[in-house]
Image 1: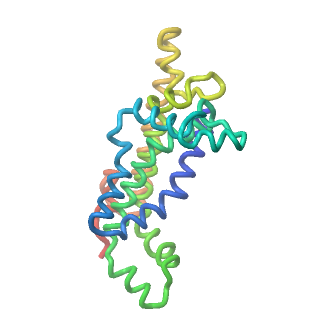
Image 2: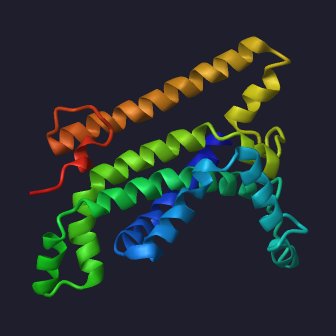
Image 3: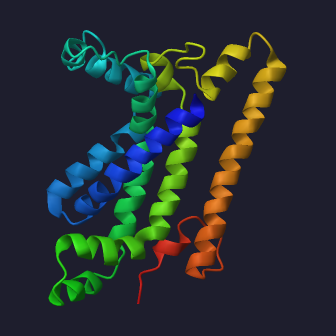
Length: 225
């Protein structure tokens, strides 16, 4: 369950979040500030509030729930709910890091590409993405680690139905009062997985960027010259 839902969530975050982060990075003034605030909002919301918000939006009697119900699609307390909850709480880590990584690219580089006849799509794919890959990779690692440990919004919006919506984090909560050794084993597994993901991204980023630092953001914190 955890592997399936986190994979779908990460695909959605990367596919939709990458162009969104680039688009926000090109905005200016108060409009950009408002967009960044919306991106960062899930970071400061209590998990229970995020779960209630998703339930109000997508529950059967929620704002959008009636529309999906008419189509025969149930969202709350299903795998879809798990994916939405994980995406909601994890995506800001990717988006915010992506915005920062796009913004530190030397603006003369995409400008030069445009003067040579490259369109916006080509500039994005051939210039901005390669120069920002270190930051995007760091953001993806943070989003993955956050999504892997998601608990509050998921249990409020998707419940903890064994074999249906129960993720590893929810299984720890259930096993805590039943079999502490099992809860401890699952906790250790999550620690190892999270540490492995973060360390792997640091090593790959250092290898590709040539930076001697293992700091996750070192590769994109330096403005290209």
